[in-house]
Length: 181
Image 1 (tube, helix red, strand yellow):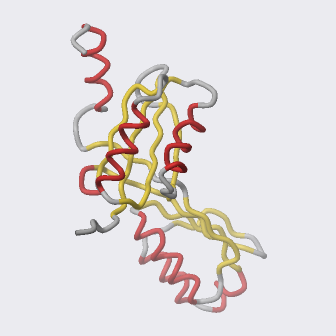
Image 2 (cartoon, helix red, strand yellow; image 1 turned 90 degrees about the vertical axis):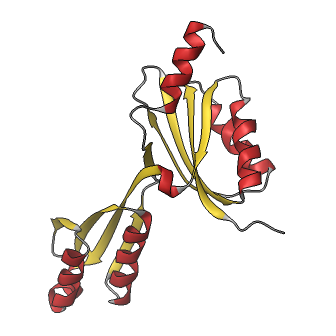
Image 3 (tube, rainbow, N blue to C red; image 1 turned 180 degrees about the vertical axis):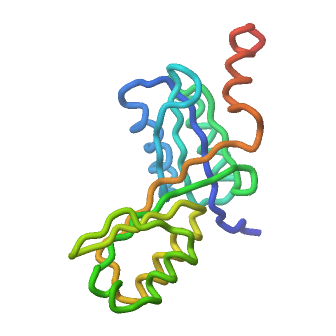
């Protein structure tokens, strides 16, 4: 029986070494799995960077990808998660035509209903920003687009933290430092 594809989030921790991003993405390329979003930043651990990667895949494939990434020399730890195991946020930026927004009060109501904020207004365009889960960011885009007022739209890569009290890599590093792994 074939497994259905789900959206998985991989949290990968590595040293800040040039070329590691290329090595990580090459694992997805070799397995012909497209990366849906990618966010790279410093983690809460000094000298360790965190890669938050989302991809549609089945669990068998995502397990193999995670194991291959973890074998990379400069990778400290890699784990995969489903959405219910993480606290997730994204942001969306929407550039809207000022004239259309001024002519149709329903556009402003839609922005307020989605708890988005207007961050800039000028005679040509209005910038709207929305923070939330992926579905909420996309939903606002679809509703605004239906009004024909969207000039530009982009959304960030996912950022995520585990539901535990500390990063899982912290526990791993503590054990490694004690020499137990």
